[in-house]
Image (cartoon, rainbow, N blue to C red; front, side):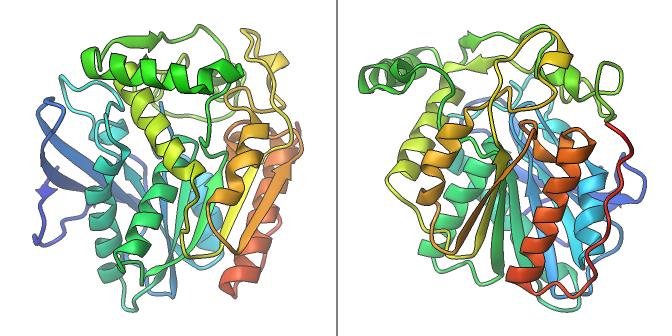
Length: 344
């Protein structure tokens, strides 16, 4: 795999997913002291020739694997790209703490690079739809606000958020000022100390086909029980959420998809197949208006935390809502396909 630095000619190589290509972006030394960082830009098929492209960001304990989502965007005229952020998925190197960062703004450099590559990759300068799931939704929202303020968002045309991580799940005391102050102190002293260990069973068992799900992915890149959560990472998230709560402006039309209800995570997958077992959807609804103007918020009945990994019926509903929004706001000219995922 060939890593490319700023200004280097892009080198695309075959990805682990058939029909996909990847480019490794060198990012230099890790400010948190875990060696050299890379990010991995993945592309579906050949370089784009149309007016639209999409850049997808994964969540925590996640990486790009959902080719069904990529196919859906492609059917609507989008060249599909996804970015495995540094220390995540394809981009994690030996000795690095999975998904660890102490500042969500540290992702800006690789996001800027990915956007520049996408803009130069096709015959026409595309309008890029940025897509973010969960923690990736928070990262994308903060980045686009900063991009707009820098006057560098000319290629961005839309934002799609899938259950964005806009606040902590759990009792209100977790979101209180004293708790936040204590978290800041602990993050400074013990940034890699684990605050939450991986769980047995739970949400992951509803997804992977080896358990009670229907999707296939690398269980080392996306463990069923999740990766440990550290003080440093959760403090970075809380700082990003506090910035969001003061109000942002991503500067483009935005769609927020989420489940219509949350469920308490349980060890038995049948109990949590319908509903968000990771985040409180009431908190997503509360803070969604802080993203910016020209917004559409759409609850999906019985959807999971990742609405596009839901059971067949809510997944089809999520794809239909996405297709309708893309047609309405971006003028996608391709037909709206009928999504058939079989029986629940």
